[in-house]
Each structure stands twice: as C-alpha cells, then as structure tokens.
Length: 379
Image 1 (cartoon, one colour):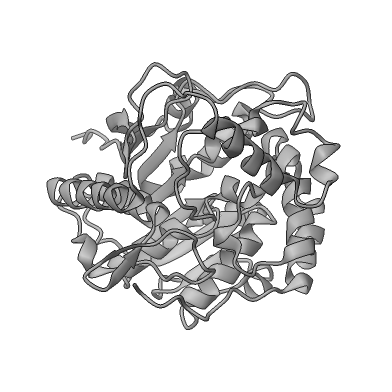
Image 2: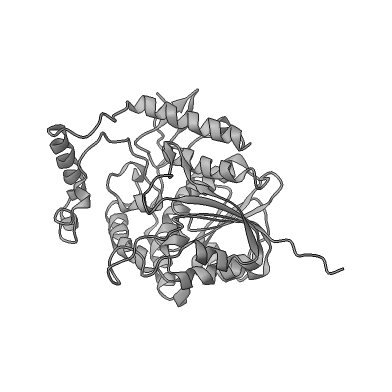
C-alpha cells in the first residue's frame, strides 16, 4: 500500500471572506445562480465548521458538488438522502446527520433483498477503471496515464494503486475528459486554456501534470474558487497565482506556464486576448440561458477551440426560486447560438472510468468539441 500523505490543504478564512465580500458586489451576470444558491449555504457552513482537513474523504458533503471528494464505492443500499422526510433543512442541522443516514440506509439494505448481485470488490473495480483509462487514452492518442498520478493531498478515502502510482476515480475521469479532446487539439502545441467553473481544480491538475507548459486561467464563484485555490497551491506551489493578486489585475497576464485563479466577474478581461482552448465541464448547464449567453459572448470572441461537457437537454428545473435546480434550462440550442462562430466537430456521451452516460435518463452528460469556423476568402 502507498503511505498516506501527511500534506493537508491549508485553511485561509480571511481569503474566503475576501472572495465572498467581492462576490456579493459583483455585477448581476456574475452572481451565484439559483442552482448554486441552494448548495452555497451548506458548503459555507461546512467550511466554517470543518475547514479543509481531509476534505476528500468526507461523506455526504456539499464539496462533492464541486468534484472534491474521492470515496470508496458503497455496496447497493437504500439512499435515505433521496427522501425529504430524512434530508431537509431541519435534519441537516443535526450534528452528524449525514453519517447516520448513510449507516441506517446500509443497515436496512443488508436485511432486504436488493435486485441483482451487482457488488464487485473494490480491487476489481479499480482495475476496471484503470483499464478503461488506458484503453481510451491510447485510442484517443493522449499522453499515457502512467506519465502522471494523483497528488493524494487532502486525503482521498479510496486510492487505486498501480506500479507505485496512486490514482482516484476523479483523477481518471478528468484524464478521460482530457483524452477525449486529444483527437481534436494538440495540447503540446497550444499554450493557453481558460476554464470556467474549475470546481476543486482536478481538471487543471490533470492538464498541468500531462502538459506542464500550459498556462491555465481559472474562473469561478466563491466558495468553489477558494477550495480550488487552496488545493492547487499545495499541488503546484510554485506555479499557482492566487486570488489576492489576480483581483487587482486589469489585464490578463501573458502566458507564462502558471495557473491563475480569478473571480468569474473578471471574465471580461478575456475580451482582448486570444486563447487556444476554452473548457467547461458541467458548469454552464447550472446557469440560466441569459447568464450562459453572457459568458459565451466572450468565448465567441477569444477562443480558437471549445470543450463543453453538459446535460444537453438541460438540468432539472426548480419548483420556484430558492429550490434545487435551475430556473430555466440551458440546452444544446443555447450552446449553438452562443457559439455561432464555431462548428461542433463532435458530440458524444461522456466516457467515465466505470462506463458511459448512454442510457435513457434525461440528465445524461455529453462531451462536445467545437472549432472556430474558417472564414471563406473574399478573393
């Protein structure tokens, strides 16, 4: 077994407070949308109470919404979190309620016959995940998976080991998203990537480890941006430029091989700069169409290529403002309109470490890659 790392992610309450204060005064198009407002208060409460120590091993944490947790797969069980009588604004105030709901659901499930025997040993599941990453990495001509590995900073609960290298499912999934793009763009020949909604920074970690020369510009809302910055500063301590420095910038820094973290309200800085690749995974779909149109108006002007991962039919609609979901869904038609200067080169169901999203569920994820249209010569 690989020894667990002693390195933890540092807490910086003053930085979080600064981000929140700035975010509260941001222009309307850059404010937190309805989808994240529902999660925001839970995430802030957890960060204040627990900080970031061992954050990747937390069960039923709102950090999972930012792709920040790496948990051991559970056997088939009844998910009590799906029932509002157990999971509501009153029960969440009970200390340790999440652990109790999970344990009770598992205990009930052990006494009830569940349909089918789908339990697979975690060791076998890990091998399946690694094999899929190897297969698609080779198929799509990406850098070999063995060229990099997970940092383990933040203490993930489930780690897959191969030849002395540690991996997590989130790392493998982000590797597969990167590999998907490789037939359409040569990462060795580009210099700049803009990511809107980097979550906990896991995609940035993968891109930077496989292509260290890249300059990454990351834009997000707090507190997700806070988690992202604190994590990446530990993974790439000499290459990460944090929010305290970028908040004062009035121009986008030149490409220099570093990672820059910005408030999403700084997105207009991209208006006069050419960027090789714009990246968005499962983030635009959580915004309303008018908010997406604002972001894509800049992308339409500065990017040469675009990767979008989303539920192309749109996310679930909230019953009313303040409830879970979006107020109005963003669909494939909104991406086509917002990316009018681009041609969609490919659109396919998202490949993950355990399978793809090709089923009959409404909220399947799809990958899409877009290239700027070449204007016909006038002569």
